Length: 416
Figure 1 (spheres, rainbow, N blue to C red):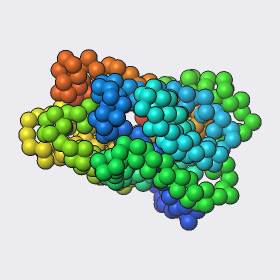
Figure 2: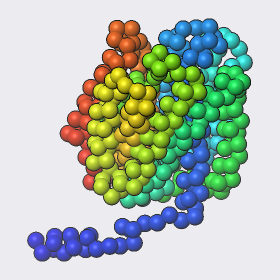
Figure 3: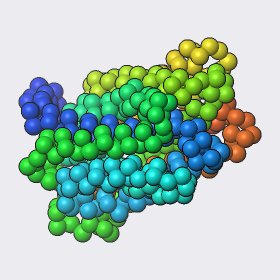
């Protein structure tokens, strides 16, 4: 007993490891990952805001245009093919290559008025985005100690907020002033600029940073079996699957609902997405500050509960400013919880971290791809109100799952 008490006292003493800090090298890495996340999130989130304009451009109903979201999401199903390769060969090549493909997909997306060709380009964009998502999150897991990881994840994911505050409104503004082509071409040029910048920021870095995965590991069956044998990994995948229906469902018909309810122009719709971006900024900032202090799981549950509660009241009759306030709170809860959740996931299996995250992207891709298909009959039967009610119910289900089955990852040992 005395030995155990002595060990507890020793563990309670402050140490250098308990007070880690960022080096200049760390800051350059955070900046590089931040820029990449900003670009790919803008490319993803501007689509729902541009659905009405895309409907006019391709002369297709909005319900048909929303298939682009399904295509974008289903390309995430290919992420598990890349995860083991990333574990083996490192990040830089996939980071730079993914950005090249992303920019080419955007450049080619509006060269024709044939909608099926546009969907092909969206598929190319989606594949590159899925690879980049896995690289960003797993790179954070390898490069930073768990004690710092919540702060880093929240900081990098502030890029989501800037995408909503600046990127999406810029895309809608360019569309209003010029054309729908201008939004995609502008994103492609911006991606090329980011590609040049990060090639300097991460130049001559090792392909693995504090990584534990052996480069000689069998990067297919061994990687997948390691994940499938682990209960925490399977539960995190199931949670990610259900969770992904919520933001996709809320955002899918948001632009159309705002135009129908308040007669908003494209620019006013972009303003609504700006409020989502400001809420996202608040959520990610709070996650960066509190996740490492209060515990990742606790922060996840607080954010999820807030998001589910706000979704219930999102469509209550009222002034436009009240809807904007609800969108702010929805985004704050979403990003407060998701940043902390992804930090939890990075520590479940450190040996095959990119493989687990690629399977997480797979689960998210399935759910996000199914959302437009499953939400369409809800939209026709009960409108946006029914969609938000179902999304809120799913949110409370996810809160229950995480409360009962996912534990704080400091207690989980790395799989050897």
